[in-house]
Length: 458
Image (tube, rainbow, N blue to C red; front, side, top):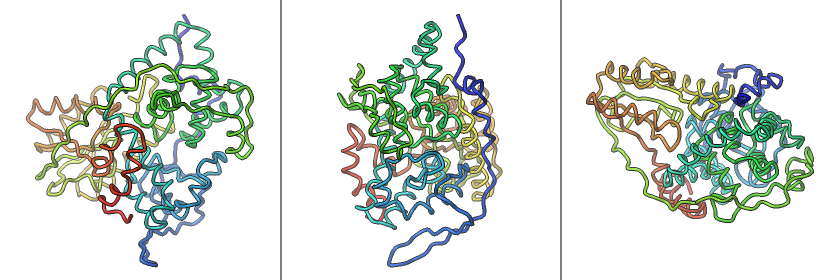
């Protein structure tokens, strides 16, 4: 039986499309100032040669703030009117492209929301705020239904096993992930994803729809392909978005990619033929919501702070009354799935962690340590915690996904040694997640009151 090659290897064999070079980690010179005008506080930017068209995917907080500041003037009606257009990888002025920074919380959701509200107000910025909240909604929805992630992993293993046994299926799957289907837009997006680690949100929807309804491939294989390569790869957003397209999120509701829609919103770049004319919902369960997991009380006194890709907002992770005595971080990017992680996603995760550790060391006046996210993690992290002489280790709340099992194993080890691992939940999640039991409408309706409770200017 031929060996099923992972997407990373296949992409490399198809002309080295992953060989675009490592992401530049050097910080570009910039200046931020707080300006007051007409009663509104805004973040202004001064940077030579800055352009919204081409995104600088530098994995650090400073780069994320630069992008946010430059895009803030367009977070209102300009975004609402043009957000659905995918003009191509070198024309991104119509979208914020902030998702990799927000996913890792190098830039916080509150910061993006505050920028939009300060510059435009609630009504003009509503569409932008909704996009920020969709990620929050999916994470809250999956927290109510952690079994959906478990089922995805089980079904993914089954689909990969089927590819290993069915030569026809394997060939169709490999053609899709290497951009050789003959559907020009789909193939272009497959290559763009592998090469850049990013896709426009509308392109993600079209891609998933074509994968499921035109190519008739298992949706879990497509979800895994995305999760392997996306810099903003997130268990909840990715899994739930694919389920939504397939009709497994809202009963009977699917998304059909249409040629006319693709032609319009790619500005005529693509006009594909032969797409599916219908999108019948796939069979599958939509489980009822359970209860949210309990939240640890914030500790005080000396703590050891552990960073993961779930939350790299190190400056605001220290609980009030706590003193950071030790700082370490780890990336589990390679745990995203059986195919590991693509080059750009891995580079962003590593660079983001390095940036957070550097910032944390400066803020708290301690040394920082990068721990390996391999099989030795639990043992090495426990040794680091012992050396800190702290009885409490604090980390950002690990949402459902690949990070939580690693931290749960560490928690068990630390507990045996008399050390507590505490998960710190952000107020943003604590206030929004209870509204993510069913459809997005419930969370959308609660947006003004939650934003106000967070102290944002609504």
